[in-house]
Image (cartoon, rainbow, N blue to C red; front, side, top):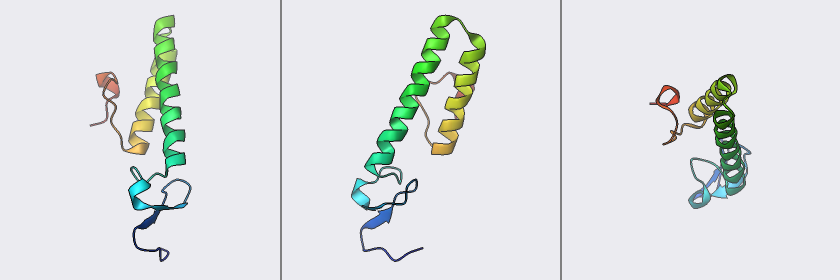
Length: 86
């Protein structure tokens, strides 16, 4: 681990050095926005697949959301029970 000034940490995604008050879950503001946008797109894709009546696509996207939750260590409130991370 590199020696960082007191109060500064590196972003767990891109490695940029940030004031620790600016990090959320170890992510800098740029990475946090990118990941939030990615998750929003996954949720939108899931909703569209459900509305189109495509169960295969819905299941595939739900699995992507589950994988995202596990990789990011988050739990989403409105995810169907079968795809919830405990």
